[in-house]
Image (cartoon, rainbow, N blue to C red; front, top):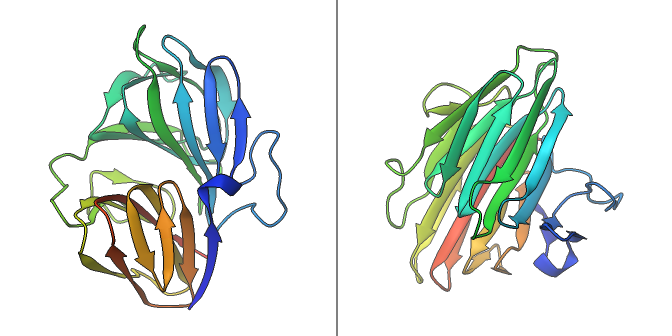
Length: 234
Protein backbone atom coordinates (compact mmCIF):
# COMPACT_ATOMS: atom_id res chain seq x y z
CA UNK A 1 0.00 0.00 0.00
CA UNK A 2 1.20 3.49 -0.88
CA UNK A 3 -0.21 6.66 0.61
CA UNK A 4 -0.05 10.43 0.62
CA UNK A 5 -1.18 12.51 3.60
CA UNK A 6 -2.44 16.07 3.49
CA UNK A 7 -3.02 17.56 6.93
CA UNK A 8 -5.68 20.26 7.16
CA UNK A 9 -3.20 22.95 8.22
CA UNK A 10 -1.00 22.35 5.14
CA UNK A 11 -3.71 23.21 2.63
CA UNK A 12 -3.65 26.32 0.48
CA UNK A 13 -5.86 29.17 1.67
CA UNK A 14 -7.70 31.97 -0.12
CA UNK A 15 -9.32 34.66 2.01
CA UNK A 16 -11.55 37.38 0.58
CA UNK A 17 -14.26 39.52 2.13
CA UNK A 18 -16.89 37.04 0.85
CA UNK A 19 -14.95 33.76 0.60
CA UNK A 20 -12.90 31.62 2.97
CA UNK A 21 -11.51 28.70 0.94
CA UNK A 22 -9.02 25.92 1.68
CA UNK A 23 -7.41 24.00 -1.19
CA UNK A 24 -6.18 20.41 -0.78
CA UNK A 25 -4.64 20.60 -4.27
CA UNK A 26 -3.07 23.46 -6.24
CA UNK A 27 -5.73 26.00 -7.13
CA UNK A 28 -5.98 29.69 -7.94
CA UNK A 29 -2.92 31.42 -6.42
CA UNK A 30 -1.94 28.35 -4.38
CA UNK A 31 0.60 26.15 -6.16
CA UNK A 32 2.54 23.17 -4.87
CA UNK A 33 4.20 20.95 -7.47
CA UNK A 34 3.73 17.95 -5.16
CA UNK A 35 0.00 18.61 -4.83
CA UNK A 36 -1.38 18.93 -8.34
CA UNK A 37 -3.75 15.96 -8.21
CA UNK A 38 -4.41 12.47 -6.86
CA UNK A 39 -5.03 10.37 -9.95
CA UNK A 40 -8.07 11.83 -11.72
CA UNK A 41 -8.95 13.93 -8.63
CA UNK A 42 -7.82 17.44 -9.49
CA UNK A 43 -9.51 19.84 -7.02
CA UNK A 44 -10.89 19.49 -3.50
CA UNK A 45 -11.88 22.90 -2.16
CA UNK A 46 -13.46 23.51 1.24
CA UNK A 47 -15.45 26.72 0.72
CA UNK A 48 -17.32 29.06 3.05
CA UNK A 49 -19.25 31.84 1.31
CA UNK A 50 -20.72 34.92 3.01
CA UNK A 51 -24.49 35.60 2.93
CA UNK A 52 -25.73 36.76 -0.45
CA UNK A 53 -22.29 36.41 -2.03
CA UNK A 54 -20.65 33.82 -4.25
CA UNK A 55 -18.91 32.78 -7.43
CA UNK A 56 -20.46 34.88 -10.17
CA UNK A 57 -20.88 33.60 -13.72
CA UNK A 58 -17.66 32.07 -15.05
CA UNK A 59 -16.71 29.37 -17.59
CA UNK A 60 -15.59 25.76 -17.28
CA UNK A 61 -14.56 23.24 -19.92
CA UNK A 62 -13.70 19.51 -19.90
CA UNK A 63 -14.05 18.93 -16.16
CA UNK A 64 -16.44 16.95 -13.95
CA UNK A 65 -17.53 19.19 -11.06
CA UNK A 66 -19.26 18.04 -7.88
CA UNK A 67 -20.64 20.24 -5.09
CA UNK A 68 -21.54 18.82 -1.68
CA UNK A 69 -23.22 21.26 0.76
CA UNK A 70 -22.19 20.92 4.41
CA UNK A 71 -24.22 23.83 5.78
CA UNK A 72 -26.67 26.36 4.36
CA UNK A 73 -28.10 26.72 0.86
CA UNK A 74 -26.18 26.84 -2.42
CA UNK A 75 -27.78 28.39 -5.51
CA UNK A 76 -26.70 27.23 -8.97
CA UNK A 77 -27.36 28.92 -12.31
CA UNK A 78 -25.85 28.20 -15.73
CA UNK A 79 -25.90 28.99 -19.42
CA UNK A 80 -28.09 25.95 -20.09
CA UNK A 81 -30.85 27.66 -18.08
CA UNK A 82 -30.56 25.33 -15.10
CA UNK A 83 -31.44 27.01 -11.81
CA UNK A 84 -31.54 25.20 -8.48
CA UNK A 85 -30.93 25.63 -4.75
CA UNK A 86 -29.42 22.64 -2.95
CA UNK A 87 -28.72 22.04 0.73
CA UNK A 88 -27.40 19.38 3.12
CA UNK A 89 -28.49 15.93 1.96
CA UNK A 90 -28.20 16.86 -1.72
CA UNK A 91 -25.37 17.05 -4.25
CA UNK A 92 -24.97 18.50 -7.70
CA UNK A 93 -22.86 17.26 -10.59
CA UNK A 94 -21.83 19.08 -13.75
CA UNK A 95 -20.03 17.73 -16.80
CA UNK A 96 -18.58 20.90 -18.33
CA UNK A 97 -17.62 19.18 -21.60
CA UNK A 98 -17.39 21.55 -24.55
CA UNK A 99 -18.02 24.48 -22.23
CA UNK A 100 -20.55 25.94 -19.83
CA UNK A 101 -20.94 29.17 -17.87
CA UNK A 102 -22.25 28.88 -14.33
CA UNK A 103 -22.56 30.64 -10.99
CA UNK A 104 -22.59 29.26 -7.43
CA UNK A 105 -23.81 31.70 -4.78
CA UNK A 106 -25.12 31.68 -1.24
CA UNK A 107 -28.91 31.62 -1.43
CA UNK A 108 -29.26 33.02 2.10
CA UNK A 109 -29.01 36.74 2.90
CA UNK A 110 -28.18 36.05 6.55
CA UNK A 111 -26.27 32.74 6.92
CA UNK A 112 -23.03 31.52 5.32
CA UNK A 113 -23.01 28.48 3.07
CA UNK A 114 -20.30 25.83 3.41
CA UNK A 115 -19.66 23.26 0.70
CA UNK A 116 -17.04 21.03 -0.88
CA UNK A 117 -16.22 21.74 -4.52
CA UNK A 118 -14.54 18.78 -6.21
CA UNK A 119 -13.17 18.49 -9.74
CA UNK A 120 -12.53 15.20 -11.51
CA UNK A 121 -10.69 14.99 -14.83
CA UNK A 122 -12.99 13.25 -17.36
CA UNK A 123 -12.18 10.18 -19.41
CA UNK A 124 -13.73 11.88 -22.46
CA UNK A 125 -13.27 15.44 -23.69
CA UNK A 126 -15.63 17.79 -25.51
CA UNK A 127 -18.82 16.02 -24.48
CA UNK A 128 -22.22 17.67 -24.19
CA UNK A 129 -22.47 19.80 -21.01
CA UNK A 130 -24.84 18.30 -18.42
CA UNK A 131 -26.05 19.56 -15.02
CA UNK A 132 -27.86 17.38 -12.47
CA UNK A 133 -28.72 17.48 -8.78
CA UNK A 134 -29.82 14.68 -6.50
CA UNK A 135 -30.95 13.89 -2.98
CA UNK A 136 -28.57 11.50 -1.25
CA UNK A 137 -30.42 11.46 2.06
CA UNK A 138 -32.30 8.25 1.28
CA UNK A 139 -29.02 6.47 0.46
CA UNK A 140 -27.31 7.28 3.76
CA UNK A 141 -27.45 4.83 6.66
CA UNK A 142 -25.94 5.21 10.15
CA UNK A 143 -22.45 3.70 10.46
CA UNK A 144 -22.21 2.88 6.75
CA UNK A 145 -20.51 4.42 3.73
CA UNK A 146 -23.15 5.09 1.09
CA UNK A 147 -22.11 5.14 -2.57
CA UNK A 148 -23.49 8.43 -3.96
CA UNK A 149 -21.62 8.75 -7.28
CA UNK A 150 -20.69 5.98 -9.71
CA UNK A 151 -19.92 5.63 -13.42
CA UNK A 152 -22.31 2.77 -14.11
CA UNK A 153 -25.80 4.05 -13.35
CA UNK A 154 -26.07 2.25 -10.00
CA UNK A 155 -26.46 5.58 -8.18
CA UNK A 156 -28.54 8.67 -9.10
CA UNK A 157 -25.36 10.67 -9.77
CA UNK A 158 -22.81 9.64 -12.36
CA UNK A 159 -19.73 11.21 -13.91
CA UNK A 160 -17.80 10.77 -17.16
CA UNK A 161 -14.99 9.04 -15.31
CA UNK A 162 -14.48 5.72 -13.52
CA UNK A 163 -14.96 7.22 -10.08
CA UNK A 164 -17.01 6.29 -7.03
CA UNK A 165 -17.90 8.68 -4.18
CA UNK A 166 -18.89 7.22 -0.81
CA UNK A 167 -19.98 9.20 2.24
CA UNK A 168 -21.17 8.38 5.73
CA UNK A 169 -21.57 9.42 9.35
CA UNK A 170 -20.02 6.80 11.58
CA UNK A 171 -20.01 6.56 15.38
CA UNK A 172 -16.82 6.24 17.40
CA UNK A 173 -15.40 2.75 17.82
CA UNK A 174 -16.45 1.34 14.44
CA UNK A 175 -14.32 -0.38 11.78
CA UNK A 176 -15.17 -0.13 8.11
CA UNK A 177 -13.57 -1.83 5.14
CA UNK A 178 -13.42 -0.26 1.69
CA UNK A 179 -12.76 -2.37 -1.43
CA UNK A 180 -11.72 -0.83 -4.73
CA UNK A 181 -14.16 -1.15 -7.60
CA UNK A 182 -11.38 -1.40 -10.19
CA UNK A 183 -7.70 -2.14 -10.65
CA UNK A 184 -5.12 0.65 -10.94
CA UNK A 185 -7.25 2.84 -8.68
CA UNK A 186 -6.71 4.86 -5.55
CA UNK A 187 -9.10 6.19 -2.94
CA UNK A 188 -8.82 9.64 -1.40
CA UNK A 189 -10.18 9.82 2.14
CA UNK A 190 -11.31 13.27 3.27
CA UNK A 191 -12.42 13.58 6.87
CA UNK A 192 -15.16 16.19 7.01
CA UNK A 193 -15.54 15.88 10.80
CA UNK A 194 -14.22 13.61 13.54
CA UNK A 195 -11.12 11.46 13.99
CA UNK A 196 -10.19 8.17 12.32
CA UNK A 197 -7.23 5.82 11.85
CA UNK A 198 -6.21 4.56 8.41
CA UNK A 199 -3.20 2.23 8.10
CA UNK A 200 -1.79 3.53 11.38
CA UNK A 201 -2.28 7.19 10.44
CA UNK A 202 -4.57 9.35 12.56
CA UNK A 203 -6.70 11.74 10.53
CA UNK A 204 -8.56 14.63 12.12
CA UNK A 205 -11.07 17.21 10.90
CA UNK A 206 -10.41 18.20 7.25
CA UNK A 207 -7.32 15.99 6.92
CA UNK A 208 -6.97 14.04 3.68
CA UNK A 209 -5.18 10.83 2.77
CA UNK A 210 -4.78 9.11 -0.59
CA UNK A 211 -4.23 5.35 -0.69
CA UNK A 212 -3.23 3.30 -3.76
CA UNK A 213 -1.41 0.14 -4.84
CA UNK A 214 -3.86 -1.86 -2.75
CA UNK A 215 -7.22 -3.55 -3.25
CA UNK A 216 -8.73 -2.45 0.04
CA UNK A 217 -8.30 -0.24 3.07
CA UNK A 218 -9.67 -0.30 6.61
CA UNK A 219 -10.87 2.70 8.58
CA UNK A 220 -11.42 2.86 12.33
CA UNK A 221 -13.30 5.73 13.96
CA UNK A 222 -11.86 7.21 17.15
CA UNK A 223 -14.64 9.82 17.37
CA UNK A 224 -18.01 10.26 15.70
CA UNK A 225 -16.97 11.02 12.13
CA UNK A 226 -18.28 12.29 8.80
CA UNK A 227 -16.21 10.65 6.07
CA UNK A 228 -15.94 11.17 2.31
CA UNK A 229 -14.13 8.69 0.03
CA UNK A 230 -13.33 9.38 -3.62
CA UNK A 231 -12.09 6.45 -5.70
CA UNK A 232 -10.38 7.46 -8.95
CA UNK A 233 -8.16 5.93 -11.64
CA UNK A 234 -4.48 6.55 -10.92
